[in-house]
Amino acid sequence: MPRGKQKRGAKAEAIRAAFDELGVNTAPKDVIAKLAEGGIKVAPAQVSNIRTKLLGKAGRPGPRGRRAGRVMTNGLTVSQLFEIKKLVDSVGGADHMRQALDALAQLGHS
Image 1: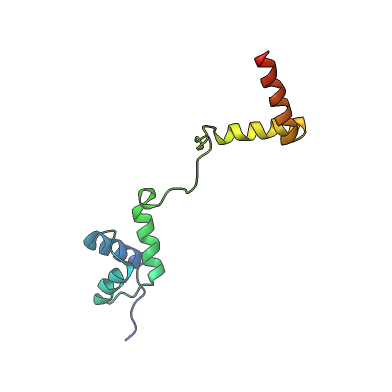
Image 2: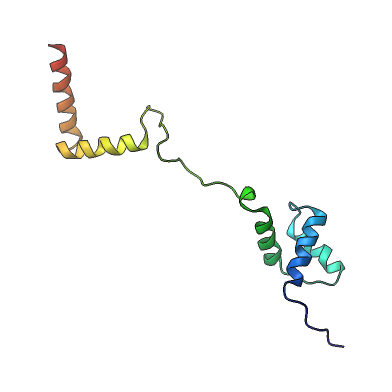
């Protein structure tokens, strides 16, 4: 005997109800097993997608890496290092910058 067509979104609603009952941190396989008891067949990807939406932004990990403007171990920020690099490039490289800094240091001691 053919079954009638399910209402649009019925499986999604059943998945949400299962997460309400079992908890949002329940593994997708447990939700699938719970729904299979009621005769509802769903794919693991669909369960995971709905779980992600239920968790919202709070359940997602944050961005990785350093944030711009954070202080490095030498006390300089990333943006300060970029500015120094521009200055070094403008005087002709690191060797010329060292010579200029040595000359500047000698001016201060005289």
